[in-house]
Structure formats: structure tokens, C-alpha cells
Length: 189
DNA sequence: CATATGATGGACT
DNA sequence: GTCCATCATATGG
Image 1: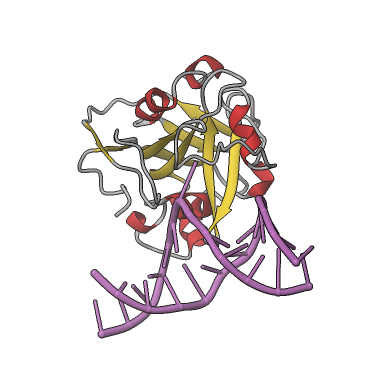
Image 2: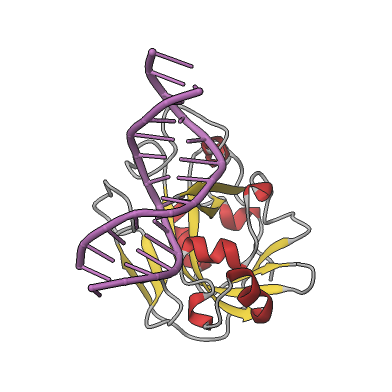
């Protein structure tokens, strides 16, 4: 089942947890790319010191106030990061897709990444966008109504969810907002 | 225009 | 474990 606006228009941490085990699909030429989401992070509004949703709105962070399912892409350390906006429209929040387990189009991903090990294809937020050829062109799209992107809830396998503090942030909240599938080989290190 | 800054990745010891 | 290339943004002069 394709995830809709109601799914994404909830609290960031709930969306981040529920995205684990879901499938991220891109219609791509020369072939479909598909990955099982195995690692996410939740970001909130101005009360979250690690969030980009500060008082000042910019071209990048203004999407955090948009409706659930909106795509937010931005560059960090020379890599594009892919986020899906959460919460009701007008309330800032987003979930960062940090890692997926390649399912389909693996040969294409190997070429895009210039790597041969499956574990190296999408086991990190910058690796994921490279494996799926995602860039600023996709900023402002919407995964609930896109022609090329969709997120599907069709997991059959059982799994346990583990959590930790978010990676690479200088000041984190007390609660843990990084979620990942326990013992999955494609979670970032 | 100049420069500092990352929600990183890869190479290396 | 350490080091550093990376480059779009944001901000200040």
C-alpha cells in the first residue's frame, strides 16, 4: 500500500519509526530502484537544537513547514541528504532517510555509486541519495503524489527497532531520535 | 565578493 | 581509531 498524506502528517518520531521496513521506490531510466528503509532520524521545530527549522526561514528549511510528504533535499559536506516532511501543514518537522537495504536495481546503484559491495550502496544518508540519483532537482516534490517517487508499506519480515542519539549533530535532545532495524547489515556505521 | 559551516564519506594508520 | 576533500548555502562586508 502506498503511504499517503495522513501517514506523513503525524509527529516526526512516529513517522520515523513507522517508515522502518517500508520500501522506497524510484521509477528510473534504465530501471526501477527499490530499497527497504532500515535507518531514519526524526527532526522537529525550533525547540530542537539539531533541527534546521530555526526562526529564519530559507529556501531550504521552509519546506519543513509544508504538508506531510513534501520532499526536502539539501547539501551537507558535499552530499545531498533526502528528507520527507512530517507533521500537519504549518508545523515544522521532517524525517531523514539515513539508509536503505537495496532490493531492486542493484546493478544500477552499483554504477551510480561506483561501488560493488551491496553493503556500500546505501548504508548512509549521502550514499542513499547517490544510489538513487537524488539531488536538489527533487527538492519541493511530494512522495505522496510524485510520478517518480513512492513509499510502500508492504513488509513481510518481522524485525526489532533499536534507537540511538542522532548522528553528526552538535547538540541533541535528551530523547533518542535515530531509529534503525536491529542487526540489519545496511544500517550506517 | 569572502568565508565559515555542516543531519558525510572515504582513505588511511 | 584519525584525517581531510567535499560544495551548496548562509551570512557579512
